[in-house]
Image (cartoon, rainbow, N blue to C red):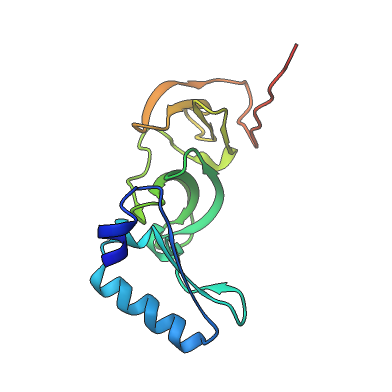
Amino acid sequence: KWLVQNIYKNENDRILFTTFTRNLAADIQGNLTKICSKKMMWRIEVVNLDNGTNEGILINEVDFKGNLGLIEIVSSTKGFVTVTMNSSDWQNSWTEIIPFDIALKTVGSKLSFVGNGFGGLAYDGTNLYVGDRDADAGGIVVVDPENETLINGPLSLGLLPSSLAVLKIEE
């Protein structure tokens, strides 16, 4: 914690703790979690050199309250994931698009303007594109990933989208 606060103050600075002992790596990770904020912990990594594993998890699937699918990373700190949800009787399922903050290790609220995001995710460097398979209003939804707002859509395709890709054509 002292290194983050006093020596490596830049937000882009990282600190790597290494050990050959699995238990010590887990202890270091656990103790750092107790004394450091989530934002600080994003900058600190603990690695067990014996097996090459990182002892930390950025965000757990449980935090999303569903089954994770596609992941689209839109910046060094932010991403979006498709999360399949099921009704309590398991008769219905749908896919929500949920943002997450990698740096703060937090999960945001679902994009409420997407009915069923099972049709895919794509990012072109500026906008996030979501394939909305909602039976009543399906199509391509264009999202501003920075503030998680609807830019356009759903843009009807005639058929519901099943996957998305962004192609860059250079002349």
